[in-house]
Image (tube, rainbow, N blue to C red; front, side, top):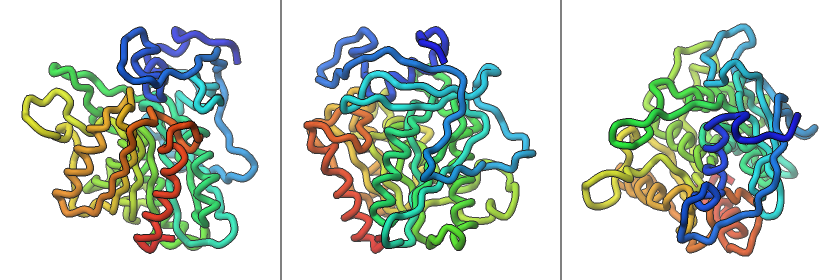
Length: 340
């Protein structure tokens, strides 16, 4: 791998910079939020992300099955160290992912038989594999939860409409991958030692949008491939941190309204939303609009909002209370649902 510049990876990784917490200030715009983070030189290039020895990686799709490719431009998978620093540390990402995988981490200590599918963020341009992936599993497994990190297909652009809104593509490859992963977890529940009725999702930023999509989808987004696709793809619970792409930010109607592509199902699972008011990347109204819409549909929803915390903090503690306190909120919430 060599030292990169943004021209090497085009507009996709510019989106990653914004999605993972630099905010508009680092892109030459002004902001009222004090969320600047130290910039460092990025190192990136061709390579395939692999888990540490504690994780068991498995393909999502049969090897011989032809699946739709993301917008790689013919490039092989890339990995890299992200900038800016988060809590003084680098974060690592993967992009140009054409063959998605799921990596399983077994619970430590008592097995609650609950499972959690982790959906990292990255603006649908990359996947933040440690900050919002393996580090989340390290926490979850300590709670007795089987954890699976999804490396889903990216990049995939959202085309901009005449109204200035970027809308999801007609075929959402990350949604296909998330639904496939849910089916595999339920099909293999016995071998993984999990209860098929205690499998949820936790998503961050774009991954939080993906968590909402898989929570509300009425049908699978693809034709059945094998027996795993006969299993339900909707999670039993959902935790969303600093989501975007939910709120209709250009509507002339008063109040909080969902973006036109957001579908809400009365069958969506109980949901916990966690967000900071000073998030410079995803306005807190995304969480507020989604939470209110779920509530209107009769879906149990809890919301935890903090004044400060910025964006893309994952589980890395800083001086902002949200970064230290949200994991305990999540554990208590799961216990209240009798999932732990």
